[in-house]
Image 1 (cartoon, helix red, strand yellow):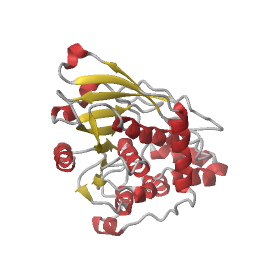
Image 2 (cartoon, helix red, strand yellow):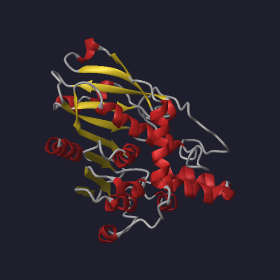
Image 3 (cartoon, one colour):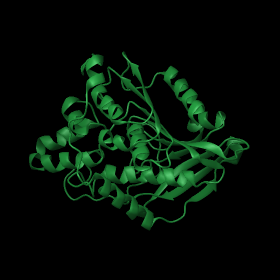
Length: 322
């Protein structure tokens, strides 16, 4: 993998050039209000007590975009009472997996709320939530990047980011957690959703951890890298040439570099300078728009992955900030 993007010095100065939609805040206020109006109470069902012992694990269902039922896991450390909680979002193609994959946080005394990803979970880890709010008003490329892309109201990522914002609200209200100590985290698509959730729920999210985040500086990304999932959009528009303007306009409403201006949480990000999936300049584009306390781990030889040492840095960051 080469250094294909801007130099590190240039990355430190790079800023997103895509203009923010004038109605961005009103658009998202409407989406969140629609979801709240359609919401029903979450349900929690105890899961596999014989496997997890003192760690209490619950299978969760809650209302996401437009009231669609979204699955998740809620893991509480032994003796949990008013503990911090971290809401985790999953990378592209994956789902919530099994609770055993999320035991690191309860091991250090932090509750974990893991959101399943609607319509995914068939790639590298399992999921159990469909996309009942799906609106296909035209053609799409296989995957979810172009599903409903001709309008921000019908776009897949509008629904998924609404799910993420709702997950934060649900997690903050659960018994045994301290809502004043709530963090969001994720890698790749999960990192983008962490940024979106922190931006859309600034009063609830106090810490944001976004590693090699997807969904940032989208108009640059789809023209810069030939890697999937961004390539789904480029391939789609190479055939649906008459839809290009509408599709690119839609992307502005879910661009985490634009949404990041609303983040008030203490933020830790990471970037790999050889990352061809989420190009470094797109990650820095989001980082530079955050005005809250922040830091970024730069891995000069890193691709689209998170080094093991950084995983421990995330734990230290959570312990220090929560």
